[in-house]
Image (cartoon, rainbow, N blue to C red; front, side, top):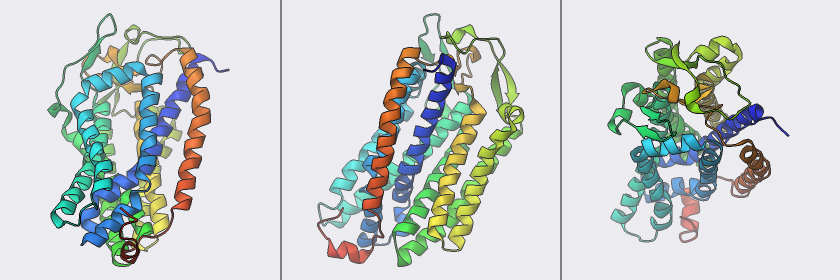
Length: 380
């Protein structure tokens, strides 16, 4: 059906599509929950925010679960090295995500101010933490992670949790946090009315400025050449199963900009990120919520593609031993595994997409305080 080289490229694209799908869908409910203290002033308004996202969040989470499963099956070496080396960071994200279903289900069970306020802050923090950590993770990929493989391909990690919080990684975290919160703000512009929609509009304007400044700042930092990217300096056959240690890797790609020089068409990605941020800003200023949401969506696609194109073919670079860096060519499963997974993905990913669109179509509409009053026990 497909040769091994093309399958490797197809799965690089598919994993990217799944991550973008997660960022587009779960991104707005993470952003909306994070913005809850800024756009709501009382219990009714907080319930409005929650009910714009609660019917969808678990379906949105399917994209993350699917991406994790695809990572495990398609890139097992990446999965093992990442989940062992980044254990505490991933555990922090996991526990933050645990708070969300509990908060949605239990927040309105008691008519107690302290109880509800506590769950509101839990939902807010449970959204802020993953939004920040995801960006920090991408920042550390560009910096390289301190891991290496021994002769038996057993990975060992030689860093700590606090080393992940370098200035550049934190800047990447700001890009992610502002981008997802902007997406949540434009979502609330569409799904609420009156004063709440206006608050979301003002917050979105500020977040668009922060996103653009952080995104352009991170790009300028990379362009300065202080961060040196990697290149594969030895010959290899991409159509065979490779040992990650069989290649030679050199630090000869200043700022990870090599692919943008070699393939100028890839510059569409950062331009799309900037255009999306500007479109969201202009649409928020003009009170055009649907266009603002389109802008924040384009910003997400552009930002993730910018990171992916810069790193290619590297998936998990190593700062400790560049030869141990994992790439699209040598971190993948067998040809048979990739074929079986591709057949499954071609069936189930479209089903997930169709089901998601059907759910949004059936549950679309604005949520207002009056709607909350009319359904005191039928909503979250």
